Each structure stands twice: as C-alpha cells, then as structure tokens.
Image (cartoon, rainbow, N blue to C red; front, top):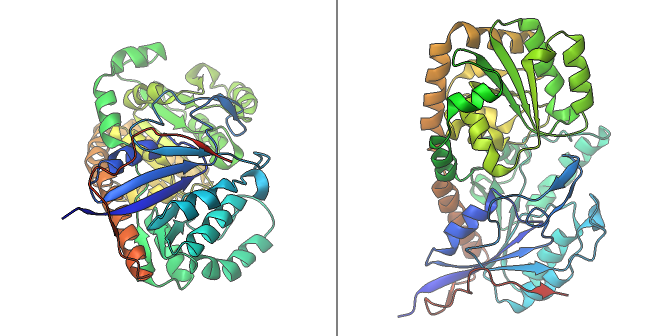
Length: 418
C-alpha cells in the first residue's frame, strides 16, 4: 500500500533564518509532502531593512533542502496592507490540491486574505496564528486595542487550528474565548544544534580580549535592533548607575538609536566601557553570546525574543523584561529573579549588581539555561506543527490523499507564479 501523506503549503512573507531549518527537517518527514510559498525573497537576497537601517542578506542557507516557490509580489513592498499582494497565491493553492495551508503572513497583509479565500474554496484546512501576548499594539492609538478585542475572536475562528508560539499567546487566545482544543502551542525555536555546535568552536578568551575584557571582566550584552521599543537606553543608564568595577557593556545591533546611545554613554562617563559592534550576521553571533556573561533584553514590546533562545544555546545567562514572551517560557523557569518590570531601572541595576557579586551563580544560571533550552527544541516545534496540521485536516473532514512515497517535489524547486 502506498503511504498516506499530507500535502501541505506553508505561506511565508520571506525566508527567515529561524524557519528554514524547520522546513528542511519537516521536508524529510515521510508523512508530509511539504512546499513553501514565499511572497518575497527578502533576507535571502540583499535588501534594505528599515529597522536595522542597513542592507541585510543573511549568511546562512535559507533556500536549500526543501521545495519552495517565489510568488510574485504585486504590492508596494511597504509595511502596509497592500505591501504584500501576491494574487498568484490563489492560483497556486487552488491548483495544488493541498490538504492544508499554513500561513505565516499576518492578517494585516492582503496576501493573507488571498491565501485564506483560496484555501476555503479548495476545501483545504487553513492554519494561522499570532505571536502577540497582549492586545496592546507596539505603537498607535488606544482604539487599536479595543478594535482587536472586538475583531480578534472573529478573526481567529476563521482558523481551522490556531498556532501559538508561546504560553503567553495561548493564554491570550483563551481570553478571546477561542476553545482550547482549537489552539496548539508550537514553541518559537531556533536551530538549537547549530547554535550549540557553533558555540563549542568559539575561542571565548580571544573574543573577550578583542573587546578589552579579561577572563574576570563581567560582560553584559544587548543583542537586538537599536529601536526605541527595545529600550537599549534603559540598559545603558542602569549600567552607568550600577557603577560596576571591571565590567563592560556590549551592544550588538544597528538602528536609529545608535547616535543617541553613543552620546549618552559619553555624557554618563561610561563610553570607555561600552562597545558598539554594529549589525552582526548570523554566523557572527554565536561568538558574541559565548563570550558574554549576561544577555539583557529590556524591551517594552517583544512578542517572544529569539535572542533569548540563541543566548541560552551558547550557555549565556539571560535576564528579560516582563513584556517579553520568552520571559515566561524560558527565563522564569531558569531563574524568576531575572525577569524584571519593563522600564524599572532600579530593578535592572539590582540584577547587574547581583551578577557582579555572585559570578558562580551567574555561571550556574547559564548551565541551567542551556539544559532548559533543549526542552524548547525544533523537534518539539515540528511535532506540534504536525499535530496541528492533522487536527485541522480532521476538523474539516478531509482525508489525507494517497500518494507514492517518492512524490515529494525536489528540494529547492522554484518558480514564479504571476
């Protein structure tokens, strides 16, 4: 008997360095016939990133090991509803005989609705979610929260299964009265094995020496875009106020706050102990996490925060604000004292001083974090994704289609649908 396999289409706005390894692993599963439709190739091709403020092209493979298609974007490319408008998605879905369509494109983009309509017309299960942990928007007027409270229960009932990447998102769905059996926790993950392997290759002493740090220096790290909602100025001010001897603060990232950070570091008298590394590509980051002692993420808006995963994979202790989704799932289980109220400079100062005073506890926290992140793994993500797909297909009463086991499209197949 031929193997029963589910034909699945993932729709993504662009290739992402965190998703590509998951697609490669899922493509090897005998129960899935997987294809990915990209609305743009941003990230795999060089292009300007508005939030980084520079041209970005990731230096890890994003398009190999799985079947994918680039669907022509007829939108403006801007951060707007019609910035992503890929009418070819409709033809791709209707002609693909898919059992399920999984959308990683948000509902605020036209292409989401193209995919939704095509999936419904094709009797394919439609699966989507959000990474939000609250109704509060990153910016904008207060009415947006009220509108979400009214509209989101209706929106997410359009999903045959809702995917939630964190416990915070799953809880948000509960408050919106989405039935628990319609929500699947699919943990936000990185390629743990890659990060751990790369970390083992790092000469920690040499990297630290390049920053002017000795083995005894306390190295505090901020790794994120230098944007207001990431609140890097909070960390800089806390670092100055803590007045720690034999410590440095390292900023890894680019963005519009860089000039202000440099200016304020000088005015606070700590410029000689602050390092600005600029934008670092993916292969450069394991060395930074491995060489640091404590990553701090003070964001006021951070649906998850995958830098937490990355740091933990490299054995670096992590502290995060209570506005970060990863604070609940990853930081608190390791040490709840490292979760602090967003914007509380005094709390940040205490964490820095405690880290400096008890380096053995800090090192132990890094080891515990490394053990914990192995429970938040790609394997768990893929198992949950597969479970959500099968549940959604069952919900609409569509049986998996029988196909020969060799019917998977060649990895890396690509085309442009007009």
